[in-house]
Structure formats: structure tokens, C-alpha cells
Image (cartoon, rainbow, N blue to C red; front, side, top):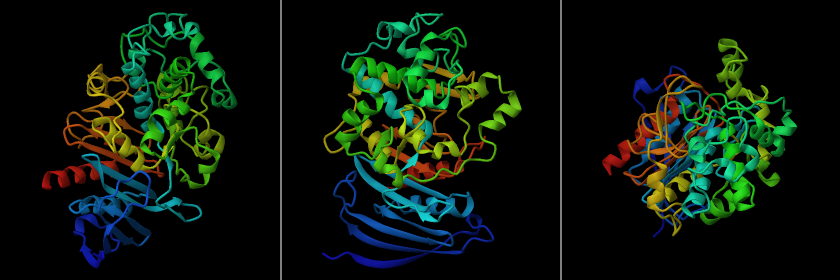
Length: 434
């Protein structure tokens, strides 16, 4: 039966519309449609296009999930969105796959179906899953000292630090010491060697504080020593290829052209240094090592995207991250990434309370960020990880949902990112109405 074509005119309530925004959005829906991407099952979805003054939102949605597309379009009208994508899996199948805006604000290059983008610390979720896979397979004991696998690490007060401590940000290695150059950091060995010889920032296990970048280097070195594969290689072999994901830690050269251009926030990490001092623990963590990593144009450099920083420079699309999280809470096309027992262990609260680095409440399991610190509108047992500037990816086992939102315009809001919050709220409202 041929797909029916129809036009729906959506009049937005005045509270959703700024004086300069269009009062009428034209929504063209066409469905059902067969899949166009390797990461989507054959499932009847409607094609949706919402025309905006600044471009368009397009993609595919299941019936009943139209409010998510409207919330996504509203981000361009009222929340200074530049380019973005959002994807949702429910019960192992895609129900939302939308994108829009500009992948490069300077050239006007549109955000397309195959656009990928830097997701910063949303990379911690896939990296934590690599570690949990090794633990599930009996190749890693999270309660043994890291020095059991990495002997050089066991010095200067780090002898008893365990993988569990790193996964839950209790290791006291949030700031990396050493006068490292950017080339040395991107080269892997110099930065992990610097971590191996340094002393902790605080007594390990006495408190928790966000290990913004060291999380990935320490866990990545464990992956390398146990599996004989770099963290990016392990990720591709054991997670991305089985699920057909377009997600990388260490972006291949041939994918650079598909990557969106980051729009840094005003101030970025420099604002932290100005407020607290460049020598403060928070400034050292967020801009370190050696003050190299402000939230600025450096993240658009090819060598930064192509290096392996498993806590910080994951690059991919929303549908891949949503599919990844769906495969943690259930099988997706026959693939499940962790067994239920290991997932339950990974989602047990390890720490909760004021964070010694970022000065707000955080809550961590074995590598995953947990509620109530993950996403205000998400379910109570949700787990995943946000990324600096607004990215968010998580799973809700109770809703059997994988959710991902990625973007290129970084925003820092002490009240939480309004763009992801409205999308998560809309997603749950759609699920409740189904």
C-alpha cells in the first residue's frame, strides 16, 4: 500500500513563540517508510519535516511521538539551538530519529542524517560499558588494586586504588599532574605514564570528585593492558560493530567531513579559572592536563578528534547512542551488551553527595551517572551520562527506553540544559500516553 502524504499545520501556543519566531510551523508527514540507516530496524515510521525560519527539522517518528519533534523544533526557536539530533528507542526499536539546523554555523552546512558530532563526557557511558564487559567476562576484578593489572601505577599513595574507585570518581586522581604538551596528551603513553607516577589529589576513597578526563585514560589503559586492544579498538570490536553504530573514540580520517563544527560557549573553562583561580582543583580538572583543554575551538581540530580520549572525545550520532543504551536494557536485533546481573551491579549507587570538583550533587554507579543527578525528567532508575555543553544519553530500564540528544552549540546553564530537559519530558509524556 502506497504511503499517504498529508500536511499538518501546527499552531504553536504563544508561550512557545518568541516575537521573532514564526507563529506557524508547517509539518509534512509521510509514512510509513523503510529504514535508511544501518542502525535502524525495518519499522514503519512517519517522515516528518518542520520548516523553521532558520532551516528545518526532519527525520522519522512513530505515531504518538510527534510532541518530541515539536519540542525539538522549539529548541531552535526559543533555546538558541544551532544544529542537533535526537533519537529514542523503545522496546528495542526506534521511535524517534530527528535532526535539524546547521552542522557548521559559519558555512551554513546543514545537519544531515549522517552528521556526527563530539559528545564530550557522554563518552563515559560507552567506556564504562567496556570495563563492565571485562568484569562480566571475569577478565577484570573491579575490587583488585589497579596495580595488579598495571604495576607502574602502584606507587606514591596509589597502591590500593581499585577500578571501582575510578568508576565512581573516588580515586583522587581528578587532576592530572605533569607539564605535558598537547602532542604528548594525544599520544596516549605520556599522559598515562604521568598518571602512573603522580600522587593522588586526595586520599583515595575518602570522597568523590568528578574525574573529567583522567577517568578515560585510567580505564582506557586497563582496557589496553587486559585486552591488548586500545580502548577505541575494543569499543569498535565489542560494542559498535555488533550493533552497527556510527560512534568512535578516535575518529577515522574518512569520517572527519561528516563531523559537525562545535560552537563553544562564551568563557568556557576560562570562566572557571577566573572565578576560582587557575590553580584550583576545579580549574585543573576541567582544563587539564596543564591547562590545555578549555572549551574552545581546539575541539574542532582533526588531531584532537582523532586521538583516543575515552572520557572526553567520543564522536557519533544520536541514533547510535540511543541504540547503544537500548542494547544495555534489552536485546536490539539480538545483541545485548551486558547481562542483567552485571547491569544491576553497574547501576548500584557507589557514591552520592556533594562533588569535590564540581560543587553540586553527583551520583555514580560503576561508571554511569545515576539519578537524581543524571537528568531531572528521567525515570528514577535511569543511567547514562551527560556531555559538556548539553549532550545527554541514557537508558531507562523501567521504560525500556534508550534516549540520546546531541548538538554542536555548547550551553552551560546552572539550572540544567533546557533543550535536553524539554526533550526528555516530551518523551516520557509520549510513553505515558501510548
